[in-house]
Amino acid sequence: MVDHEASIALIAKSAAFLAANHLQGAATSGSVHLGLTDSTGTLVAVLSASTSRTRATILRYATSCIIPGGFARLEAALVAELPPNVSTLVMHVDVATGEAGPDGSDGWTSTGGAKPDYSYVVRDTRVHKSTYSQKRFRDDVALDHAEGLTVHELAALNGLPRIWDAGMVRWVKPVAAAVALRTVTPDSLDLAA
Image (cartoon, rainbow, N blue to C red):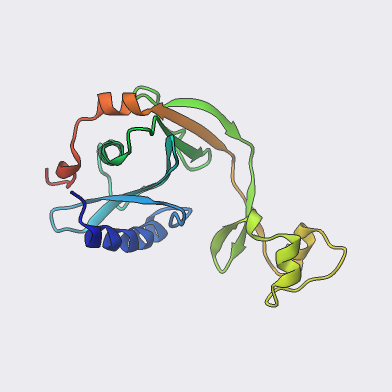
Protein backbone atom coordinates (compact mmCIF):
# COMPACT_ATOMS: atom_id res chain seq x y z
CA MET A 1 0.00 0.00 0.00
CA VAL A 2 1.33 3.44 -0.91
CA ASP A 3 1.43 6.08 1.80
CA HIS A 4 0.09 9.26 0.10
CA GLU A 5 1.96 11.64 2.43
CA ALA A 6 5.19 9.69 1.93
CA SER A 7 4.63 9.85 -1.85
CA ILE A 8 4.24 13.64 -1.76
CA ALA A 9 7.40 13.92 0.35
CA LEU A 10 9.29 11.70 -2.13
CA ILE A 11 8.19 13.90 -5.05
CA ALA A 12 9.70 16.97 -3.34
CA LYS A 13 12.82 15.06 -2.29
CA SER A 14 13.23 13.49 -5.75
CA ALA A 15 13.17 16.90 -7.46
CA ALA A 16 15.94 18.18 -5.18
CA PHE A 17 17.87 14.90 -5.48
CA LEU A 18 17.70 14.92 -9.30
CA ALA A 19 18.69 18.60 -9.41
CA ALA A 20 21.81 17.68 -7.43
CA ASN A 21 22.63 14.32 -9.05
CA HIS A 22 21.35 14.28 -12.66
CA LEU A 23 22.82 16.25 -15.54
CA GLN A 24 19.35 17.25 -16.76
CA GLY A 25 17.95 18.03 -13.32
CA ALA A 26 14.47 17.14 -12.09
CA ALA A 27 11.88 15.44 -14.29
CA THR A 28 9.07 17.99 -14.27
CA SER A 29 6.62 15.78 -16.15
CA GLY A 30 7.17 12.69 -14.01
CA SER A 31 4.07 11.12 -12.48
CA VAL A 32 5.87 8.26 -10.72
CA HIS A 33 8.83 8.86 -8.40
CA LEU A 34 10.59 5.96 -6.70
CA GLY A 35 13.63 5.99 -4.47
CA LEU A 36 16.16 3.86 -2.65
CA THR A 37 17.40 4.79 0.80
CA ASP A 38 20.42 3.68 2.77
CA SER A 39 20.29 2.27 6.32
CA THR A 40 20.03 5.81 7.76
CA GLY A 41 17.02 6.67 5.59
CA THR A 42 19.00 8.96 3.29
CA LEU A 43 17.79 8.98 -0.30
CA VAL A 44 20.56 7.55 -2.53
CA ALA A 45 18.78 6.78 -5.82
CA VAL A 46 15.72 8.11 -7.66
CA LEU A 47 13.83 6.93 -10.73
CA SER A 48 11.17 9.23 -12.21
CA ALA A 49 8.78 8.09 -14.91
CA SER A 50 5.64 9.15 -16.71
CA THR A 51 2.87 6.83 -17.81
CA SER A 52 0.45 6.84 -20.69
CA ARG A 53 -2.28 4.40 -21.59
CA THR A 54 0.07 1.67 -22.86
CA ARG A 55 3.59 2.61 -21.83
CA ALA A 56 5.75 3.96 -19.04
CA THR A 57 8.64 6.24 -19.96
CA ILE A 58 11.60 6.41 -17.61
CA LEU A 59 12.56 10.07 -17.55
CA ARG A 60 15.40 10.11 -15.03
CA TYR A 61 17.53 7.75 -12.97
CA ALA A 62 20.26 9.05 -10.71
CA THR A 63 22.31 7.93 -7.74
CA SER A 64 24.49 9.71 -5.22
CA CYS A 65 26.75 6.67 -4.79
CA ILE A 66 27.47 3.33 -6.45
CA ILE A 67 24.47 1.01 -6.05
CA PRO A 68 24.85 -2.39 -7.71
CA GLY A 69 21.42 -3.40 -9.01
CA GLY A 70 19.86 -0.06 -8.08
CA PHE A 71 18.26 0.54 -11.47
CA ALA A 72 16.86 -3.02 -11.58
CA ARG A 73 15.33 -2.59 -8.11
CA LEU A 74 13.59 0.63 -9.06
CA GLU A 75 12.52 -0.77 -12.44
CA ALA A 76 10.92 -3.71 -10.60
CA ALA A 77 9.09 -1.31 -8.27
CA LEU A 78 7.88 0.72 -11.25
CA VAL A 79 6.56 -2.38 -13.01
CA ALA A 80 4.79 -3.48 -9.82
CA GLU A 81 2.91 -0.16 -9.72
CA LEU A 82 1.85 -0.10 -13.38
CA PRO A 83 -1.75 -0.73 -14.39
CA PRO A 84 -2.27 -3.95 -16.42
CA ASN A 85 -2.78 -2.10 -19.74
CA VAL A 86 0.82 -0.77 -19.73
CA SER A 87 2.76 -3.13 -21.96
CA THR A 88 6.04 -1.31 -22.66
CA LEU A 89 8.80 0.49 -20.81
CA VAL A 90 10.67 3.19 -22.75
CA MET A 91 13.72 5.31 -22.02
CA HIS A 92 15.84 7.73 -24.05
CA VAL A 93 19.54 7.73 -23.24
CA ASP A 94 21.78 10.68 -24.08
CA VAL A 95 24.60 9.28 -26.23
CA ALA A 96 27.19 11.54 -24.58
CA THR A 97 26.35 10.75 -20.96
CA GLY A 98 24.37 7.51 -20.88
CA GLU A 99 27.29 5.14 -21.35
CA ALA A 100 25.35 3.51 -24.23
CA GLY A 101 22.42 2.42 -22.05
CA PRO A 102 21.49 -1.17 -21.28
CA ASP A 103 23.46 -4.01 -22.84
CA GLY A 104 20.38 -5.93 -23.99
CA SER A 105 20.86 -8.85 -21.59
CA ASP A 106 18.15 -7.50 -19.31
CA GLY A 107 15.37 -7.32 -21.93
CA TRP A 108 15.99 -3.78 -23.20
CA THR A 109 16.29 -3.36 -26.98
CA SER A 110 17.59 -0.32 -28.86
CA THR A 111 15.05 0.88 -31.41
CA GLY A 112 16.87 3.83 -32.94
CA GLY A 113 17.67 7.31 -31.89
CA ALA A 114 17.41 11.02 -32.39
CA LYS A 115 19.92 13.36 -33.96
CA PRO A 116 21.80 15.88 -31.81
CA ASP A 117 19.58 18.71 -30.59
CA TYR A 118 19.99 21.80 -28.45
CA SER A 119 18.56 23.53 -25.41
CA TYR A 120 19.02 27.06 -24.20
CA VAL A 121 20.93 27.84 -21.02
CA VAL A 122 18.84 30.02 -18.72
CA ARG A 123 20.32 30.92 -15.31
CA ASP A 124 22.62 27.86 -15.40
CA THR A 125 19.75 25.50 -16.32
CA ARG A 126 19.04 23.71 -19.60
CA VAL A 127 15.65 24.73 -21.00
CA HIS A 128 14.26 22.88 -24.02
CA LYS A 129 14.26 24.97 -27.19
CA SER A 130 10.48 24.58 -27.59
CA THR A 131 10.05 26.84 -24.55
CA TYR A 132 11.21 29.79 -26.66
CA SER A 133 9.09 30.54 -29.74
CA GLN A 134 8.49 33.67 -31.82
CA LYS A 135 5.27 34.18 -29.80
CA ARG A 136 7.10 33.88 -26.47
CA PHE A 137 9.71 36.44 -27.51
CA ARG A 138 6.99 38.78 -28.78
CA ASP A 139 4.62 38.43 -25.77
CA ASP A 140 6.97 38.03 -22.77
CA VAL A 141 7.76 41.54 -21.49
CA ALA A 142 10.90 40.21 -19.78
CA LEU A 143 12.38 39.30 -23.20
CA ASP A 144 13.69 41.62 -25.92
CA HIS A 145 12.01 41.29 -29.31
CA ALA A 146 12.68 42.73 -32.77
CA GLU A 147 10.52 42.04 -35.82
CA GLY A 148 12.08 40.04 -38.61
CA LEU A 149 14.54 38.09 -36.46
CA THR A 150 14.62 34.28 -36.31
CA VAL A 151 14.15 32.47 -33.00
CA HIS A 152 17.90 31.78 -32.97
CA GLU A 153 18.63 35.49 -33.45
CA LEU A 154 16.11 36.44 -30.74
CA ALA A 155 17.73 33.98 -28.35
CA ALA A 156 21.13 35.56 -29.06
CA LEU A 157 19.62 39.04 -28.57
CA ASN A 158 18.44 37.87 -25.13
CA GLY A 159 21.76 36.30 -24.18
CA LEU A 160 20.45 32.72 -24.32
CA PRO A 161 23.33 30.47 -25.44
CA ARG A 162 22.60 27.09 -26.96
CA ILE A 163 24.03 23.85 -25.62
CA TRP A 164 23.98 20.77 -27.81
CA ASP A 165 23.56 17.15 -26.82
CA ALA A 166 25.06 14.26 -28.78
CA GLY A 167 21.74 12.68 -29.68
CA MET A 168 19.59 10.09 -27.96
CA VAL A 169 19.11 6.34 -28.22
CA ARG A 170 15.61 4.97 -27.63
CA TRP A 171 15.39 1.76 -25.60
CA VAL A 172 12.23 -0.32 -25.14
CA LYS A 173 11.37 -3.30 -22.98
CA PRO A 174 8.14 -5.29 -22.87
CA VAL A 175 6.63 -5.18 -19.39
CA ALA A 176 6.31 -8.98 -19.51
CA ALA A 177 10.13 -9.19 -19.78
CA ALA A 178 10.48 -6.79 -16.87
CA VAL A 179 8.15 -8.92 -14.75
CA ALA A 180 10.01 -12.11 -15.65
CA LEU A 181 13.36 -10.57 -14.66
CA ARG A 182 12.05 -9.01 -11.44
CA THR A 183 13.99 -10.26 -8.41
CA VAL A 184 12.79 -7.89 -5.70
CA THR A 185 9.45 -6.64 -4.47
CA PRO A 186 8.60 -2.98 -3.84
CA ASP A 187 8.62 -3.73 -0.11
CA SER A 188 12.30 -4.74 -0.20
CA LEU A 189 13.74 -1.66 -1.80
CA ASP A 190 15.98 -0.29 0.86
CA LEU A 191 19.67 -0.94 0.43
CA ALA A 192 20.05 -2.65 3.76
CA ALA A 193 17.85 -5.49 2.45
